[in-house]
Amino acid sequence: MKKNFPLARVYSLLEPGPVVLVTTAQKGLANIMTLSWHTMIDFEPPLIGCIVSERNHSFAALKATKQCVLNIPTVEIAKQVVGCGNTSGRKVNKFEKFALTPTKAALVDAPLVAECYANIECKVIDAKLAGKYNFFILEAVKAWIDRSQKHPRTIHHLGKGVFMVAGETIKLPSKMK
Amino acid sequence: MKKNFPLARVYSLLEPGPVVLVTTAQKGLANIMTLSWHTMIDFEPPLIGCIVSERNHSFAALKATKQCVLNIPTVEIAKQVVGCGNTSGRKVNKFEKFALTPTKAALVDAPLVAECYANIECKVIDAKLAGKYNFFILEAVKAWIDRSQKHPRTIHHLGKGVFMVAGETIKLPSKMK
Image 1 (tube, chains in turn blue, orange):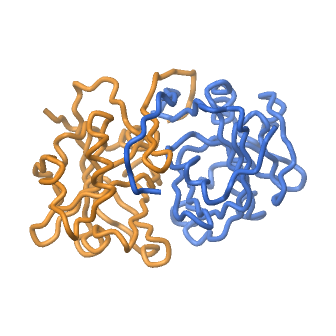
Image 2 (cartoon, one colour):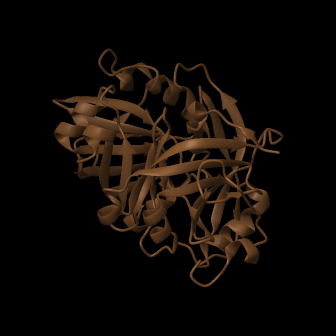
């Protein structure tokens, strides 16, 4: 059961650098791509930069629809995450192939991935650097979280299929957001 | 003892999303800022995007000198990392205050932080989005690593001084870089 997650806190989901699954939908066909190359750009409204290459099947849908969802998986579905990164939506319906469940988003046409502990609905607000650097700027417009997952074990790609799994957390006195 | 680290592998240091210390130098004064908002943009030459706000003292040095070093700390110096994030170079010499050691870089004037397990010397190649989004595009020109650290416990900011410390690694069959 997913609950609303405050937009002002979206940075706390993405700033640690987890692998995400980007979902798009175009002409009734949904797709999933695996992405590690993203960064927060601003806190509120939450702006996010990400690299989606023109080699990716998702590039055209993202450019055309200007919508996507960033879904944050945990280690429990690491195999599916790697599967999504090693196949192309040109050839495969990844939801079917990897037994992932699309559910309806609130504000965008792209689906949420139900198996991910958090989902961030986004709209493309600036694609000026999409040509030169494959860089898209997104605004998060709605976010969801499964609050039953107290310590989501996100995965962080070290390259070539090696992932660091989120370990313990520490807290230090800080004035930082 | 730091060894050369291949530029083609720089992505494997940054893609998992660790907190980094950005060093700059201007007019003989070096500064350090703590940064989590970065992303890889391309593999080779390695291009990196990062957000340095005009509120940060480092903004002016980065814009003027077009050089910096991304230093990757581990949990052993987490307190210093938070200290650097909670103070301004306008008021404090952070190398002195936090007992960090500047050492000479090969290709840029900004210093390496000796206590970090990896250091990436960078040049700013595109600052067109620095005005609108505080977004700088860097090219890594030289990288260093302490090979004695087999499992560097990088830290990943979850917000408000809470950090996830890198946990175990897993390897899955993958064609991904």
